[in-house]
Amino acid sequence: MELFLAFAKMSLAGFGGVLVFARRAMVEKHRWMTAEEFNEAFALCHFLPGPNIVNLSVVFGSRFGGIPGAVAAFFGLVGPPAAIVTALAAIYAHYGQIDAIQRTLAGITCAAVGLFLAVIAKMMLPLLKQRDPVALVLLFAVFAAVGLLRLPLPAVLLVSIPISIALTAWIRTRGTA
Image (cartoon, rainbow, N blue to C red):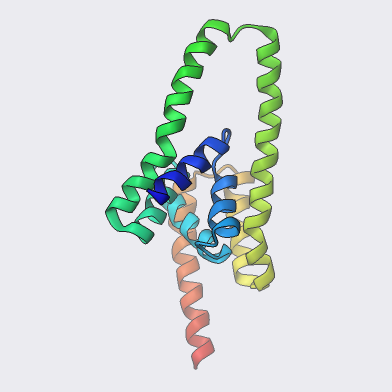
């Protein structure tokens, strides 16, 4: 029940993107995970098919409550917003062409982008604090490949993940030798 309520609160607070609120709740408020653990779990969720935050709810829920925890976190995350969005879609279908509503939605878009940039900055801090040059080079290489060169994400992941694993293994074996 605690997982359901926690994820329901995150989802209801996070219109436009739950990631900001999920990180805040899991890392800062409840301290269920460290910033590094959150980043690792979220990175795994990027590799899995489907919406990243939904994947995170299932991964996190199963970590703390097994299959029932995964189900509770999932339904807490998607249940309440699905009901609200369905109601809002019906209202928008009827009133969406009103100029004031269109301007309001444009303003909400700006706020969502700001929240997204804030969570990116918070997620980068653990990497920057480690001052690991390999991790930083990989971070910026993947950003450049996907964000600037517009290469397909699956292709970039197929190349970058094995490189990342190999470099990490090489560095660890070199450090113990």
